[in-house]
Figure 1 (cartoon, helix red, strand yellow):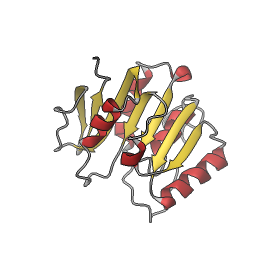
Figure 2 (cartoon, one colour):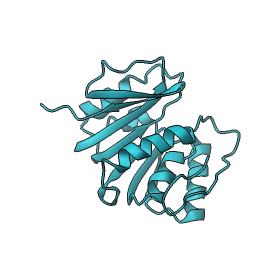
Figure 3 (tube, rainbow, N blue to C red):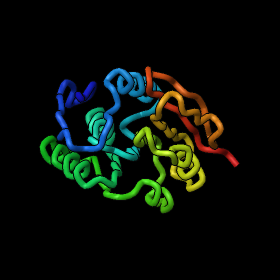
Figure 4 (tube, rainbow, N blue to C red):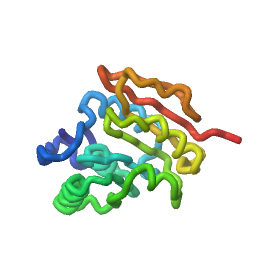
Length: 180
């Protein structure tokens, strides 16, 4: 995996092979960041990266100038790896939390402009992610939730659904806050 843009552009990371991860492809990540960069002022955004895994997405956000990134994962190896990269590249804008994402989403303490979730593709509870984010008010008024999921899974019946964009076997579904 590599950083596509920003101050760390071009840096490649080789995460340990024993991590239970499937990093977002460079092609899909580049498409996603083109969408987000043209929609949000990265200087004034807060980001929540759920199921952060290798930290690939968190590192990209920090490289591109996001000052407030919260990365959440429950796997100790992932947390250790992400913290080691943060230390090596002084990515102090990233706060790492070791937590079960579904429990984390029941205790809102902040709103975010951008929330990215990249759960394991075989996780049967993927449709709960938009429900928890929307129902527990994690999204700022102008916020967006992006859930990466297998293209065969349809999330268009979930609250706040806006659109899905497909990149091979992976898709990004976008969700907005639901107005009362």
